[in-house]
Image (tube, rainbow, N blue to C red; front, side, top):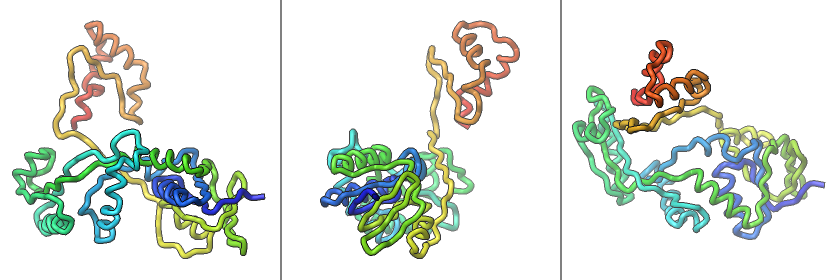
Length: 288
């Protein structure tokens, strides 16, 4: 016999967990079904999120406005620390696209958010990494925030569990059958029944839609990368030795690295094969 719930949410990322939390607040019995072994294996776990009142079209702005009180309250006190961390945002544009900067100013006027249109020289003062031959100017948007996505997700998980939500990992949904008595959710580890299915499968939402016999909307899983870096820093400090490597370089697993660190700490003359390595493994390599 299938486990029975009022609502089954497919997808344990921030969309699915927040929906489960909100539904459970209203007294519904909810289960979250996640196909991965962790809840944030995909988009949620790789998000570099910002809160900007002026971001996006009118619908996005209304959603932002409706979310602000909850975020300001650190997820109704469920988060361990601040969910919003202040960070101004610098928008830039090349020659020929100055109208995009004007659009940013207009968007901020709609939301009554402070901003400043600045020339190329001032923009480069703020971010020296920009190419002056490419740059036309910028807009500083004040009042922006980083969103602690991991902290927010964990707050939702905590709140959901407190309200009796069942969270099931490693439960790939194999089929969805709509019977007269409700939905039958067939997973790799058993079946669930419910009145309502919520499709929060992210980039795989179309796959879930097909199982339910619903029209797809053209969503595709895509890889994405964001680079975060300082435009000026010095990683050196007295008697402080870096022994760390970026994943995939093999630096941290090479036995010769341990010998190199020991030699540097002991002020030994480095063997030629190690001395030639120092520029390649120096933390300055991250500055380029």
